Length: 152
Ligand SMILES: [Zn+2]
Picture 1 (cartoon, rainbow, N blue to C red):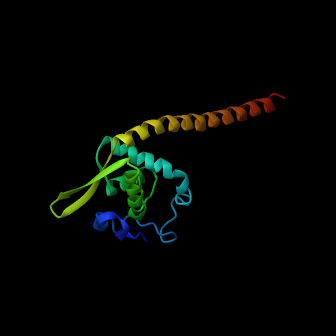
Picture 2 (cartoon, rainbow, N blue to C red):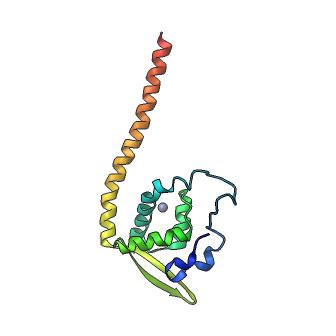
């Protein structure tokens, strides 16, 4: 269970309750590997956050929902420390926005964050190309093998 008190200000406490906790074994295992692979995706998740924070101010619950849409299930106990870390690195800046009794911390990318994203874009594109080239290559190798086998 996420320790919500760790998140700064605990802004997302009420709306997130019961929604984002992922306790293994207590729910239907829809994607059994989604949590084990999280380490692989941690950089992608940060880039995702950075991307959206360059577009508009974002807040925790919105990011949790947006990331879930892409198949990343994060609890607030994971997301908020990540956001704080990115803020400490200077990629994000946050301010507390109040409307009535509701306060939420909104994050925007800094100039440094935008530059980092620009650099990352090139690398992601390289990786993308390589990942899908290899798929294409291994497919065409299979086709060659198949064609060679049937020719005899
Ligand atoms: Zn997105």
